[in-house]
Length: 203
Image (cartoon, rainbow, N blue to C red; front, side):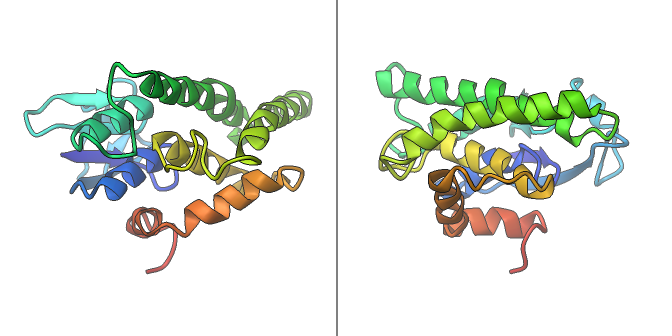
């Protein structure tokens, strides 16, 4: 399997999941500004959406969207704690949290990265993001991970997008449980391996 990624982008989440599961992945970096792959190919030919991640399977099929890819990877190792079994309420809870992170947190960061975003919109989006983190803070104040005691695909996703706050110099000190979560996850060997492979930290 080949994972198309951009360092530190949302593609880091399924990369972490693969490392947690011990699944070997071939990595190919994508230059998002030019939509070209590290090998010089047109990335739109791989993923017409032009975004990362994309997972190319051994049979040539391509799967897109981080939460879908993370769950697909988890299902290659049935019984892992990364994703509960399909058809269970626990799996539905995972999907519920993945959707929340995707729609309420991930997408709220998007305009904050754009230099042409006006100050009024930036302020409104930051306030919206803080309200959404309020729920996450409440959850993490009572348990180590989003769904309880086990690290799941949702935790990999939350860790990835919350790392963007550091890049944007967004102060999250009002969320101590979230910050403790970020530090805890950053120390996981699989997380270190994925971030090292993407050049985000030194080996």
